[in-house]
Length: 168
Image (cartoon, rainbow, N blue to C red; front, side):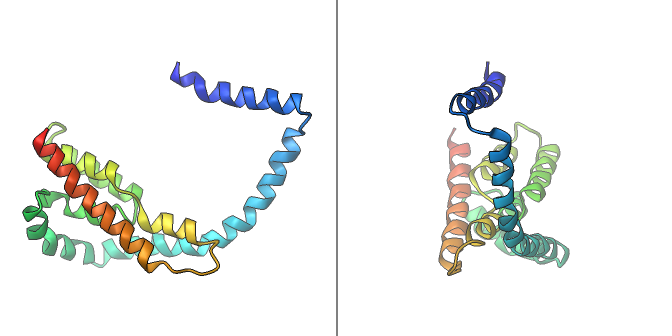
């Protein structure tokens, strides 16, 4: 039933457009024309985020921060093995997916570490990617406060998620 929702929604939208005599293809191409300038304005920000996430990993900064944060994570009830995932998720969704898979493979799908990793992955967001997308069109780019709040919220969600995994 769920697999039919999206096709039925498109069909209903298409029928509605026909009833209203909307030229669907012309409307679609007009929307695409408006999207191209947006994509061009987003590209530098997305390129910067992707390069920074790669540099973060390649420079060894990720490993050093993971090692430095291990005692704090342990004190907050977060397994230190999740440190790399906690640091990578704000930068890269695909990189953090690979880390999640590695943690599950190493520790087993039913382990406490794997459960915490899944909750941490699902409860956090790629902050820098979303910031690039949201603020690309903004005239005043005041990123510091929103990014700091989003990073802090991500960290709190990981801590709360690991606490829930321990309790449940």
